[in-house]
Picture: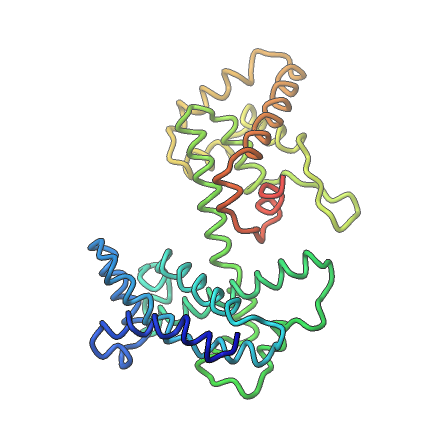
Length: 305
């Protein structure tokens, strides 16, 4: 497909939607993003489509620059980077978060989208290199993009330092949201120990390094983490605070299962429960279809069990 054909198939329909917004070409990306948020709050799907289309059109220039730098890239691959990045930015709306520094900047939404698009692009190359288990010489690296001299400033907005500092922020949020949903589902079913197992795998120390580059999952570390509740309150305080549980009731429930039994009996029970929990996660279709490979090893391991 030629670039002109690609524009006819993709850009023209986007422009038709965007043109329903008066003078949208003179609006900033942040103004368009706020317009999308307003439409979303009113369940105005037509307005959401219009503002989303306008934002994509504002980023259309990324596609020819990415593809001209890497002749092996397909136009729709770059298009998907833009769409996925914008969708990720619109999901979290960090420019509207009063606790975020971006909320104080007039172009906050633009910076959010820039970071999200770079994040999606970076994950594409991470996955590509993981599959091939080496750096693909014909692929365009992030370093190459950063060092390009003929890219307009609007296309290449992040410095190399800030790119690597921020590139995983939204993937991390995405992963945390999925993991927390799983944990809260177990909690709602009164399966506190299963919730703690998932929390330990993703947020605590459940991996050991045996003098290799590979981390190895350790059921013993999961068991040790949960058993620590018998001696100290650090983990139970964290767990109850994060998942909004009553500490006294939760601790009493957990200790009723951990105490008054032989230590080996408790450990054997927890080991079997870990195995059952991991089997449930393997068959969790929603998890397998929704997850992004995480930057934290716990996420990546959990999603590839």
